[in-house]
Image 1 (tube, helix red, strand yellow):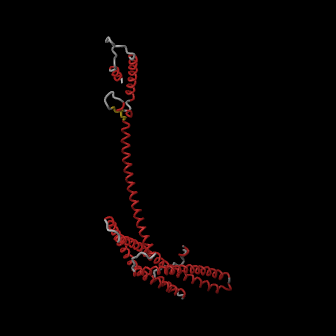
Image 2 (cartoon, rainbow, N blue to C red; image 1 turned 60 degrees about the vertical axis):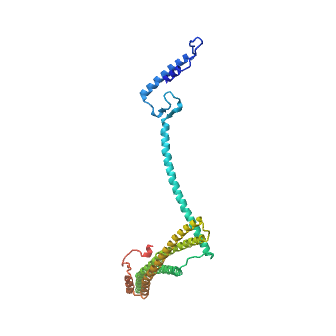
Image 3 (spheres, helix red, strand yellow; image 1 turned 45 degrees about the vertical axis):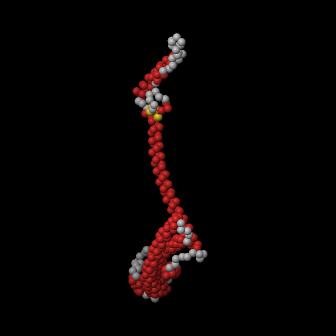
Length: 355
C-alpha cells in the first residue's frame, strides 16, 4: 500500500511557473503524513500476520494486475459457496425429476382406470336399458345359477344343523344335571333309593350317548361349513372375476364397433388400431377366466357329491343309532368316519363348552 501511495505521489501533476521553477504544493505535508501513517499500519499488519498467520477466509484473488481497482477482487468464500450451491441444485433437480416421473406414472394409471370405468359403466347402463348387446354363454350361465341356488340351500342346511346342535347340547346338559339330582336324591331318600337310582343311571347313559352324537353332528357341521364357505365361495369369486371380464370385453367390443362405423382418416385409423389391441387383450382375459370357471365348476360338483355322500351317511347312521338306543352302533359309526370320541373320565369341557 506504501508503494501505491508513492506511485500516486510520483505521477501527480507538478505545476511549473513561467520561470520554469516548480511551485510549492500545499499537499506535500499531507502526503508525507499519510505515508507515515500508512507505514505504521503496514508494520502492525505484518506483525499480526507473523503472530497469528494469514486468514484464509479473507484471502482475495486480484485480477487486473498489481495496484488495480477493487472491481476485479473475487473473495474465495464466494467461490466455495457457488460450488456448493451448484452441487445442491443439481441434486435437487435430480430429485424433482424422479418425483415428476412418479407423479406422471400415477396420473397415467388413474387416467387408464377412469377410462376403463367409464366404458364399463356405459356398457352396464346400455345392457340394463336394453340398448346394448352382451356376450352370453347359455350353458355356463345355467350352471352358475344352479351353483348359486345350491349354495343358498346348503346355507339353510348349515343354519338348521347348527340350531339342532345348540338345542341338543342344551338337552344333554339338562340330562346331566337331572342325573346328578336323581343320584343325590337316591342317597337322601332311602324309601325311593331304587327308583331314583334307575333314573339316574338312565340319564347318565343318555347323556353319554348324547355327547357321542354331538361329536358326529359337529363333524357334519364342520364339513358342510367348509364346503359352503370355502369351496363354493372360492368358485363364486372366480365367477365374479369372470363376469367383470365379460363386462369389460363387451365394453371394448362396443367401442371398437362404434369406431369402425366412423370416418377412416389417419387419426381415426390410429384410434381403431389402439381399440383393436385393447379388444384383443380383453378377449384373451375373458376366455381365460371362462375356462377357469368351467374347470372349477366341474371339480366343485365332483367334490360336493363326494363330501355330501359321506356326511349324509354319517348323519343318518348316528341319528338312527342314538334314537334306537344302540350305543354300540353309535360308537361304531363314529369309528367308521374316524371321529375321535371323548375318553371316559376326561374332565375337559366338550367342544361347545370350549366355544
